[in-house]
Image 1 (cartoon, rainbow, N blue to C red):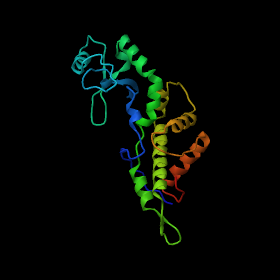
Image 2 (image 1 turned 120 degrees about the horizontal axis):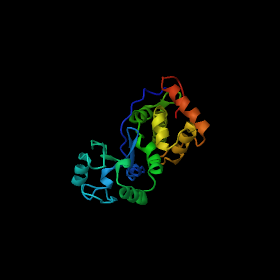
Image 3 (image 1 turned 90 degrees about the vertical axis):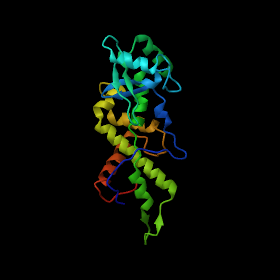
Image 4 (image 1 turned 90 degrees about the horizontal axis):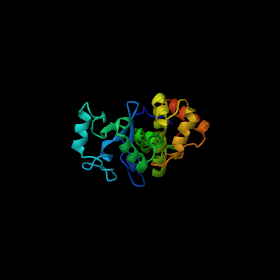
Length: 223
């Protein structure tokens, strides 16, 4: 079948789907630098698991002073948490964070793929409208629509990660890496949405290649 030009939309979770796991880490990369979400440090305007080390206003005052080490990495915005540079934090704060939440590179790596996941709403609309059979009288079952839509969305994320290869490798904390093996590992561990993509790196690469060709668009199979 012909697959439409890809447009992506932010995912709104539905029944049986949980994307909250990507919110359960204080670590996030921004502009190639490891940051900590401020809401995990403050005693007010904070996450439920915050360390409560300082008030929100107190931290912002420290970040605005040249005499203090803490450095703001990103201001808060719609769907974007305020971040402070991990490397700029006092040693005792770093120790408290890693003691409670784990090593930053390992946790940031786990969340990197999830943070870049975007549900492809146009893919779902396409599969809902698709008809087949001798007289185009049949339509896909809703469970297949969901499966194909999630598969397409995860593949889109794989493509996005490949395009951000340098940032992706940095998030892994490696100098060099087998990119397809790493992507395959991430796809296999990413279970915040149901998908059935191949577990083998070579099979995944073939699937992604076929998907990209279908997007040109050409005649192809469902994904």
